[in-house]
Image 1: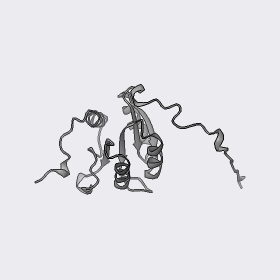
Image 2: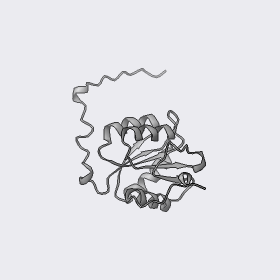
Image 3: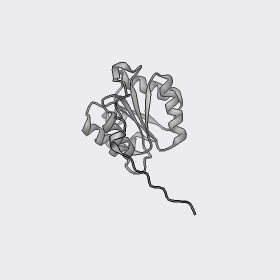
Image 4: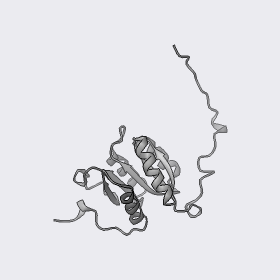
Length: 156
């Protein structure tokens, strides 16, 4: 039988979460909010983003992502959303972030663009599985706004 512990936190002594976060102009390439519920994939993607010069804010699911986006949105340059979040569907996360900031740069990682509702409209789609160089290229293009039309938004 394990003992039960209760932790009491005095909010007056909690640090301001933005106090030590540089403004985007002070960061190398900016900050990325990475939403992925798989720890190994978070590690993989974080390493690539760090090599590109980004700082990474990790979120384990959609609800965690929205909380962190609300707190850090003034420094976030890019949001990468994996489709397998458990509490909130990836589409919902994108829709809510777009309501908060219509100009947010968002990459959606998913198995197939055909499953993405038209109203979601991320800036780019990264089909899974992919290699590190594909993530690198998509991130570079979204940050630089050097993007072709998204495949599901073009007329046939």
